[in-house]
Image 1 (cartoon, rainbow, N blue to C red):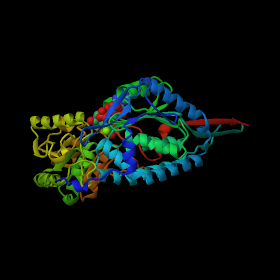
Image 2 (tube, rainbow, N blue to C red):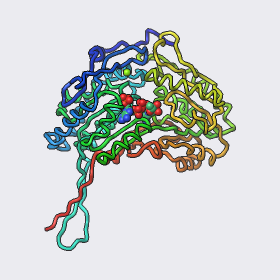
Image 3 (spheres, protein in one colour):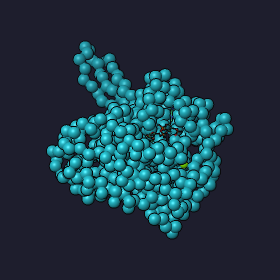
Image 4 (tube, helix red, strand yellow):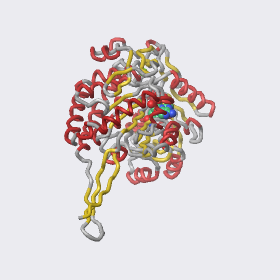
Length: 500
Ligand code: NAP
Ligand code: MG
């Protein structure tokens, strides 16, 4: 299953970056230790080996970073024109493009996603930067009619709010950081970014690259550290104007509570338990791999993973056989193995969590038809590998169908009618993604309209473009990601009345 010879050796730039061993905070353009001197270990999930120490920032460091971001917002950065910020984003695009192999190798080493996946994310990352570059010159106000007596002119501006706190998870920071960086640079805001303790390295490297191409100090600051200290301090800081957060619904709730301190507007992309509905008339040659990879991609560590696969009764047997057969062909291995399609989970903690859900599924009466084990063979020992797992005969009220597992675990839930599929699909506290596979267009549209979720796919799964975007409803959060509405988190509307 694993071939030593297809192992990618690190390029010089990635080796040099990773061999630093110690990674500081980035505050006001300076690489600095945490004020307390504390550090935390960061690990390669393919092996469990420590690859370096991150500065463990706390409230004191967050406060320093926020002061730097505020000073930058009020200083020279506020005089940059939209064209100048656009040119900066264009240079960022080119720098990311030129250095992508290094960034992909850093990301793979740090968070385990296979190199095939991190390399393939290049197009998406570059598209995102291009999208935000285009938005620099698209932020406009309007002149408005009014019925006031006299000669009054009325208009509105869209003004940058100020300092953005960004808090992101570990499941794809090379891409995920751009939802925040791109929007802040496009609108003229400044940022304090708190990456996940388990995957901070690509964020630090990108911030370094941005400073190399002329980003002024203080515009983008990075405070690594624990969520419960650095993240909590950022979300309750009275001089942070907005928070953009991606992560779990529980943490989202804490951030909402903390936001009351200064009425922070939030953009929240939280958990999901998305339904993927497969009708008997679907093209199974597409639907089987499509639905399987809709769960297994990134080892199941994707917020909109289609983890509840509803299959119409007449094809349940065939679907289960085919999805199990497909799943057994998926190659799991170290991220730096060019053949790997799936890598390890992010951490020992996530490994334990996923294995405990697999155990629970069996006890709840679901039928394990493939996978379900920690993988230790060959060169996998020490890493956090779980074989992609399929449960059949799942009921929608089992905990494995209700709770977000965030691992490669697919649940097959049978249904009979379209109305039943929609009702079961909506029986969840989440509302992030969903999909339908059918050749019948009216059936597809009924599902698209009937499912309460922020994004729906038809005969495909997981396509995302920043021009189109996605978002959540219900406990999956609020605030658009992508599209023009994305910038609403970074702007406020100011109306003006001019007499005379
Ligand atoms: P999480 O705890 O919500 O972490 C997301 C980010 O929030 C990380 O940067 C985290 O820092 C930070 N954070 C944690 N506690 C915080 C607090 N009290 N205040 C402010 N920030 C805080 O999620 P996780 O621990 O990585 O994963 C747990 C579960 O969240 C997963 O199993 C999955 O269900 C869900 N999840 C969803 C997504 C998504 O894209 N929607 C992504 C990842 C995880 P630390 O990493 O240092 O704790
Ligand atoms: Mg790591």
